[in-house]
Every structure is written in C-alpha cells, then in structure tokens.
Image 1 (tube, one colour):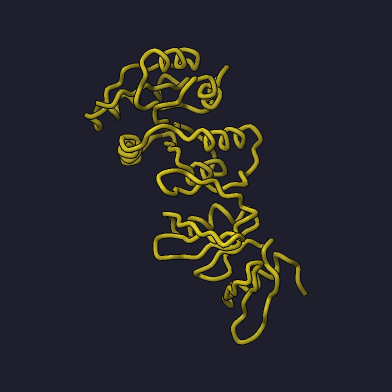
Image 2 (cartoon, helix red, strand yellow):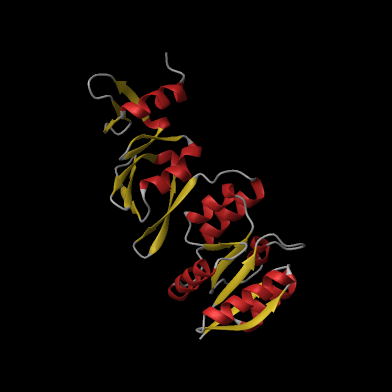
Length: 246
C-alpha cells in the first residue's frame, strides 16, 4: 500500500480528493489529511508518507515553504494547484507532478501511477519552481531526465532543438546533446516565451545563437555552433519581425 497524506487549506478539496482516491486507487492508503500547513508538516514528520498531495497556495506556509522545512524529502510530491497557465508550463517540464483543480480522475490515476515509480524529489528542481513562484519570472533552466537523474540545462547554452518523432533533441553550444521525451510542439510552447522561435517544422532555435541568415532558394540560418538550420517560407516573416530586419 502507498501511504498518502492530503494537505489543502480548502476542506471541500480535501474531501473530494479523498473520495476520488478511495473510489479509484485501491493501492492508496490515506493515513492523514488536514487543512493546515503547520499540521501537515507535523504529519509528514511523524507518519513518513510515500506520497504527499500538497496545495501550493495556503496561508502562513505555502506548499514550497512547507517543503523547505522538511528535513529530508524522501517521498513523492504531487502539487494540487489552481495555478495559471504561465506557471503550469514550468511544472509540465519538471520531474515534479501537479494536478489542476478541479481534479480529473484520469489525471489523478496517472499521477498516482508515476508516484509509485518515483523516489524522492530533486531538491534543485523544487528550488527552481519555488523561486519562480516567488518572483513570477520564467525559469531560465530546462530540466532533462538523463542517466537516471535530472540535468538542469541553462537556456542560454541551448543552440537549437530538433524534432525526433515524439522526442526532441536539445543541442548545446558545447556540442552536448540531450533527448527530451516531449514533442517539439510541447517544447515550443515552453520556450518561445524565452527568446526561442520555431523556424521550421523540425527546428526550434535560440535567437541569441544566430550568426547569419542566408537567403536563396532555401533560406537557412548559420548558428553559433556552425549548424545550418533551414527556415520555412511560412516562418521567415516571423523571424524577420522578431529582429525588426528590413
């Protein structure tokens, strides 16, 4: 059985989540639930759960502040949040999981299934999301699963991303490459607000790494790592508009 604690300052949300877990997740044992972050902290310390369903916006201590007081986070965390789309994109690309209120049962089942396979939270990733929550700024790092762990890539070092079927290859300025288990469309949604642009159906580029735009029958870009990236006719005008070229 998976020992679970529910922490949310809204009693109705706690009751509904309890009901959903009881009805649909027989492998889950709800060992405690509360509507106070301080009480939740005590419950985590005393009951040593496998999974904590944790609201983010709570009075006195929000979800991130609560976790900061836990001596050792050796359990999975599933954030339950009414966050806006801006913040959800950060969660979508992290190893941390979240559920959006009101919680859909299929999403709940998927989150529980992932929590069963996952071990402890990566503290660096938690810190990134906490800082974003405090500042309201887009994080400037991308979390990538690699060799059983999580690598944090600074976006300024990413030259371009290339579609590889249902995956995306991330190419860095130093020549290193990483594979994301996400489509290029999903990566585009996350990165185009951070000075990246989709210039071709297969390529998303970092605008800061462009060296030259070459015109001809097939327009292409020369990037800082000397890679030639094709520019589709449909995307050429978007590229020119971003730079204000004449």
